[in-house]
Image (tube, rainbow, N blue to C red; front, side, top):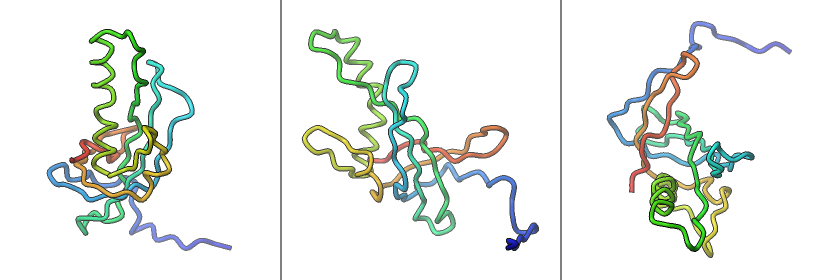
Length: 139
């Protein structure tokens, strides 16, 4: 079976996303990476889909690295707690923005799928191509 192809209508690179507006998005995928990062932190990979504004509806926006640092041990000093706070700031903003349930102090990435919130986004070049990335989770 052959697949119909319209070469005149397909693109080889998506247009840069408008970084001056807010986007309403829904979480389509949220996974914890199998391996930890170089600092031994867990991290999430997210795929968001724009639902508003209409002109960007269906656009995919990624957040491929959201670190989650484990809570410091009991006698940890202020420096360890500061690092914990700064590392987990983006994660907390994500949870609040998307209203992701946290039950009994635990987060299940599957619970984020389908959650909605507002973000700002930016375009970055990766491998010479435009990629849309989360800039900020709005709370």
